[in-house]
Length: 75
Image (cartoon, rainbow, N blue to C red; front, side, top):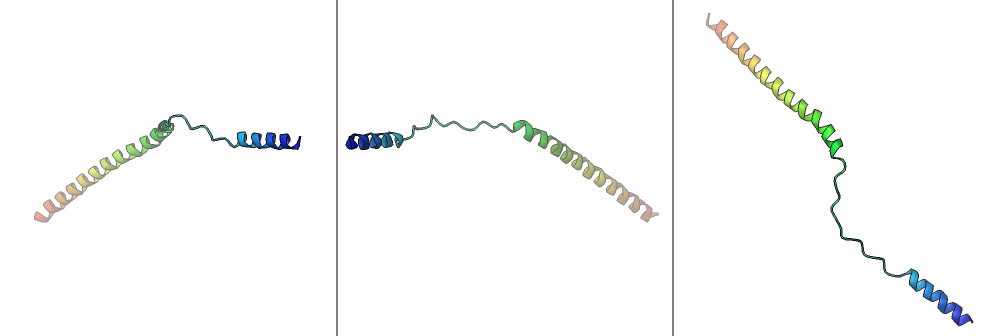
């Protein structure tokens, strides 16, 4: 009786320690945060465009000031 009980316990332990099933074919993770990323990037890109416009306007103003100073120096 003891032998049968020990054999049964060993059999259950062996079944419990069986090899895990291999995972299904791995597939790449689908990006789920694209909307959030786009919502964050949109104002940043707009600010960069405005910055370019401000720099261009500042350069034009600086050129106009230098031209005006040059004209007043010639008088």
